[in-house]
Length: 286
Image (cartoon, rainbow, N blue to C red; front, side, top):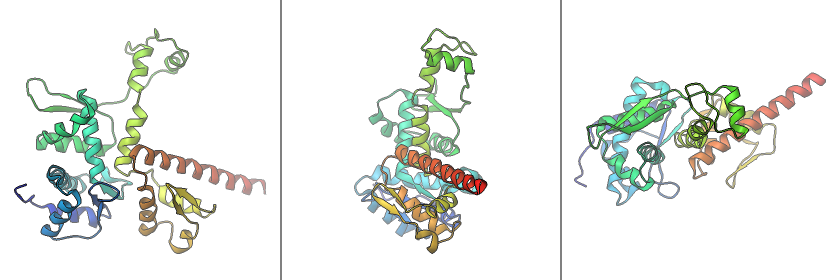
């Protein structure tokens, strides 16, 4: 609102770009802007504010997150493994959702709570989301307005506990004294949340794009959200070419819901395994 400048913003974005991480700002699909080359500070700031229109809060939050992402890629580059494009607005959305879920507040209040975070808490929440590990969010006792974020290991139940759970025996106690009902409650929505997080980060499994290239060479094309990936791409680009990976990424990003996008990635992985198994099976029988 006051046009205040975020120091080192252009440097942070450049640090992401030189490590082959594209950045998008603004709400997809109509207002999303992709940053593919370094820009001077004033042009970058203008692009961000144009993408968000009158939403000054999101514009400033985007600049803050870009600053932290630039720090992370310099100090913890492993956080960005198998991520080609950072869609900042989706990261903002998933951060707000995680806050609402962890604090037990309505989903619509998550955005306001996110804007109320201290820089330390904002950076910590972003780091935990980028890490891909399980974490919990709660209120920090005695400090109104602040939150606590802690990494945690997911509980793994014994096979006998899982069997009884599916059998409908809610009185079963697992290791640590958890009942079958409690185990079910802990696991409810776990995979939806994980897919939403990975989808918002555009994270894919290792070797996904090279395997996609192989898959296209063995079929007549793939249709995703009305967009077609033709087999001719394998003749125009190599399996390890960044241009090919970005082309596939662009098609996947036409899927508006992050969790559905991630589910599509998983479906593609299953197809890759099936095709590979079938081809190897033919070679063995021959």
